[in-house]
Length: 161
Image 1 (cartoon, rainbow, N blue to C red):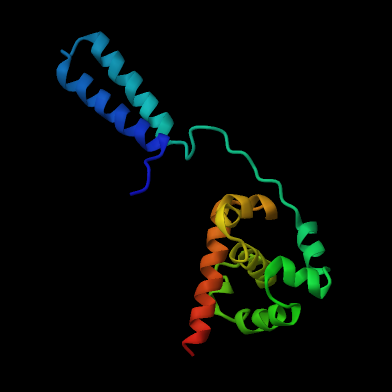
Image 2 (image 1 turned 45 degrees about the vertical axis):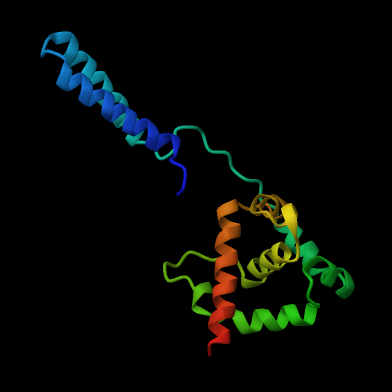
C-alpha cells in the first residue's frame, strides 16, 4: 500500500480536529473562532497541490546528443545493443499508439525514451534504480517509470501482432 502524502495526512488531521472542536465545544464565541481558524487552514491546505516548494530537475538535452554520437562499440557498451539493433527497434516501435499523443502536447522522441529504458535495463543492482536513471538523464523519476512502461508495452504489443 502506498504511503500517504503529508498533504493528505494534514487534511485528515485538520478535519478530525475541526470535527472534534465543533462537536465537543459549546457554541460560544471562542469555539466559533477556533472552528473558523481550522476551516481556514483546511481550505489553505486543500487549495494547494503541494505543501512544500517543488524543485525543478535540471534538463540536459546535450547528453542525448552525446549518446547518439557514440561509436558502435561504446554505444553497445552503454546500452547493451548494437546501434543497428537500436535503430531497428525505434522503427518497429515508433508507430505504436503508446507513443502517439492525442492531447496535442509533444511527447519525448521514441529514440530518447528507448535510450533511457535500455540504459536502465542494462544495469543491475542499485545502478538500475529509478532515481539513478533519472539523475543520469536529467528527468523525473515518474518520467523514467512512464518511459519504461511505454517501451515495454510497445514491445509486448508488437510481439502479439
